[in-house]
Image (cartoon, rainbow, N blue to C red; front, top):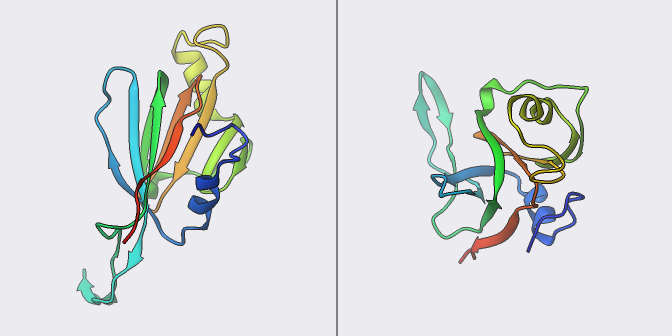
Length: 154
């Protein structure tokens, strides 16, 4: 099922409610298909010490947990940024939280200036963003992505 620009998709609501959302996998681009998966993370009960900090618990996506697959056919551009390098920008306009749809963004401006993509070809450019504990994934496309449950938790 396609993810509309207004984010009215049953899985979008579930993704927004995930306490800990992690990037599971970003697949190599195949032709003009970009696909990535995110999943609901779980805090593990195995405290350990990292860099002298005691009682650290990891947040991992269990192997049989729910995973959400995003498939962008004919995307124009994408960017993956490590979460520690994200800037909060206040002059952008978007809907959503963890999963966003932008009507005004610096990434849209960049793609418009740096590529030959226009609203005439390939069509009205859309900017989607997914924010996980690990990454921020930005995609510019003329077609909404397909969003499906990739694996049902057991």
